[in-house]
Image (cartoon, rainbow, N blue to C red; front, side, top):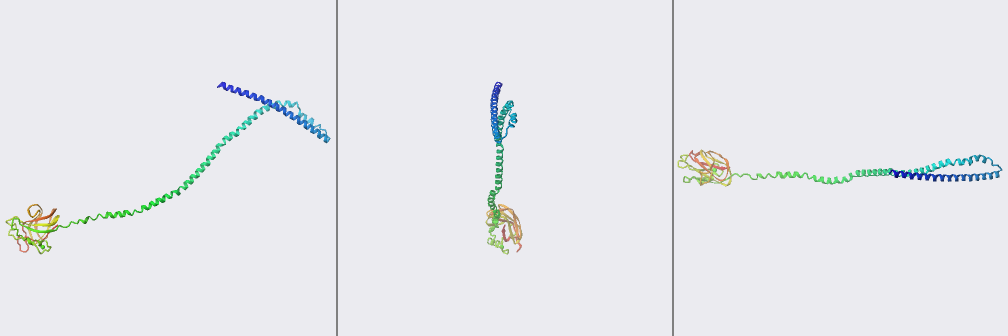
Length: 323
Ligand SMILES: [Ca+2]
């Protein structure tokens, strides 16, 4: 690297020296030319002055003496040496200056584009900002149509009163009370005397179902309220249909005795569960411990009450009801 650099420096020096020699030669030639031109001008001026003097009658003596010193050729050679030095430096410096002044504008031109680019970028940014503001300010307008659609949706919210309509169906479930428990009704009565002759006035039983408290079904009269020769007599109750029975109401025209209300049939009046029992009287209600769903009952009289009419041991039943 050092050798190459040295070689390069030597080459540059050679070139510089060659340039200096060429420059000095050129300067000498230029000086000679300048002197020749000056001498010619002086000769021309002298000839002109001489002719002018001849024309005007004046002798031109002054110019020669005054100008010779300025024209002194001897000093002229003295000037050439300095000019050679100055010219050499000036020649060397002039091209350098010219070269330096030349590239400067190029550098400035090369540096100029950056501010231009910056200015263009600023202008572009400003334009972009203006467009952005315009778009932002213009955005609300397109948004307005959207709320219009929302307003169209708003009317859909008006059907809110519909829920009120839904409230009405809730009130409809009231029809449940359509199952009113119809009171059980007695279809027919039949005296039971399984241990006797069965002559207990069966034809009078409708009097106990006619709703008239003055009419009644009556049994035969017994000397012994306990019958003496049999365990008891009964009354079979046939219902219109199988229903839930919870009580029996006996409206008796007398008082006392004892009745067993049994869940059984006419063929076995002393069987089945005893739903209620006790002495009888006017409008006596016998309530069951638990309701029974049935279509028949049996009133089994284990002892006889005393009739109001004659005080004898006899059953006089004005009305019979089931509940
Ligand atoms: Ca009656």
